[in-house]
Length: 46
Image 1 (cartoon, one colour):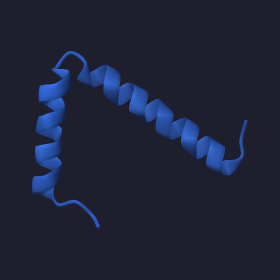
Image 2 (image 1 turned 135 degrees about the vertical axis):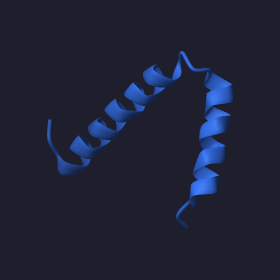
Image 3 (image 1 turned 30 degrees about the vertical axis):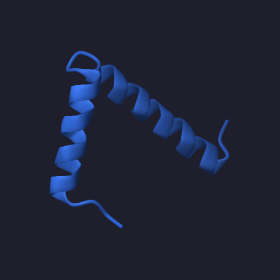
Image 4 (image 1 turned 45 degrees about the horizontal axis):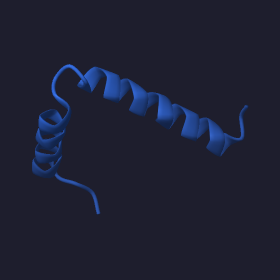
């Protein structure tokens, strides 16, 4: 079930309130690295 624009906006506002503006770039970077590692694991790369 895909999320609509309003749901994504609400989720982003909640994340901003929970983590604050200074922590968001660090959080996004760590999520990006985790996604990249997960995709590498799916492909079987080392």
